Image (cartoon, rainbow, N blue to C red; front, side):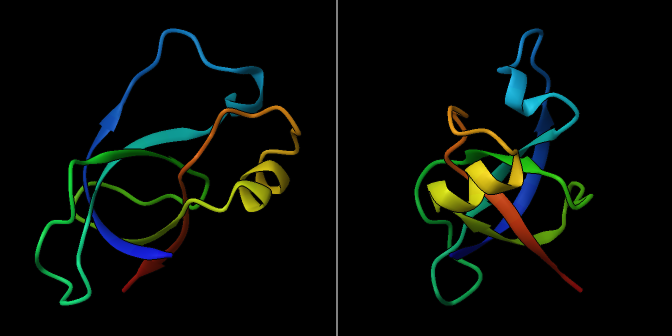
Length: 85
């Protein structure tokens, strides 16, 4: 799990069937200080409703992504698992 800031959204003309109905967010992962960027922005699937500027918790747990999207073959690596108020 890692904190990140949503810096934008992404649009896909074609998605894997497991991703239908999900939103794609561009998230800048943060170091433990909560301010310093950690690498390049990543693409994460969002089913919770986060938007640009939101601080989110993201996970690269493949088992969670498969359960979230109800698919054993989903290509999703990162997913939003929480939104910080």
